[in-house]
Length: 462
Figure (cartoon, rainbow, N blue to C red):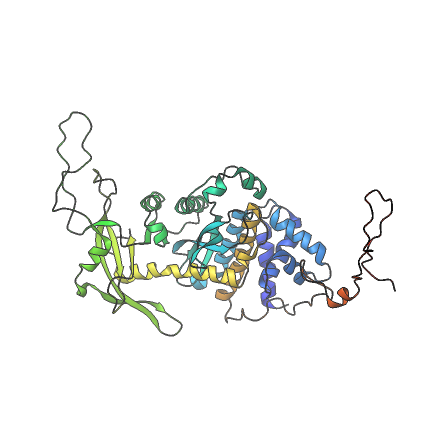
């Protein structure tokens, strides 16, 4: 037996132990095999035809029940996959140093698949009909692995009792913003004892003050993207003092007005920096050349939105990326890492987020993350968890194997499909069509009360 096949059998044995029933081992193995085999579609029926060509119908029913109805835990499966991967890669690639937070959109037609709505879809780069899910990946410089995944349920879905019922959305699942979902997933990961010490997220999350506060409540340092709009107090400046407290009534919370002491936008601060503050930093090797850009890092305090309150936010890093030849900065990041953190380390962590984008790319293009054809909440999450399980197996093989041989078949020779197999909805063959009798019944229409009726013959007699 090929060593990769042995690894796959060990993987199936370890992960299936958390599925809650011994009978689920077979469907789990078949589903992951179908995801790992080459094929245009990674939905249930084509995979059933590949893994069990001699009994497609029964295999289809088994896989469909396993992914759409069986009540196994997504969190338990993802935890087992994480443990398997870390066991195999830790010696060679180390432990994860950060948790990456992002969301991904999957185009979807119709309105009945759970969570589908007209919203921004990153895959398309525009507003369109799609499903969006929030995910967490653990990562370091050598690998990344999704460990939590949850569908974003738009308000129109959260408030539609009929659609919720048909899609079997859990009653406890109320509307939550994407940053709120991310914080909830982080709490789950912390409770499982699997939360790395640094959080990394894009500007869609970083601009949210409550999200950044939530990260710190969880004991996480962060490097998050922001826009140029937030207002900050540059290093060496601060709000005017609070009025003295007379001892009567409430203590003052608004500071004295001072036209000379005002926060400025992140963009204005960057535009006002001397160009000598920018320095070239290389963060990793690309496919053709080292990746580098110009950066500046300054210490700032974020200004409050609702006037200046009595408590100032802690000082933190503002990291500015400014491409050579550009008229203004390209990107901005906030970081709560210590004041002694070198700029090279700030840049390295800010750029680590590319790994979650590669996770999505491989999960969609190679493993069919967006190709689930069911409509239910459970089926959506089960399919995603199984895609992540297959991805975790590949990630472990990629790192633990002495050579990168993953492009070679893992399962040996792929069984051929039956000659008469056709997916549901495909047109009938020409031979079958030739046997149809297209002659209609007699043109004279019989009365409704007539007791006999001619029926067209679909197949001609021999």
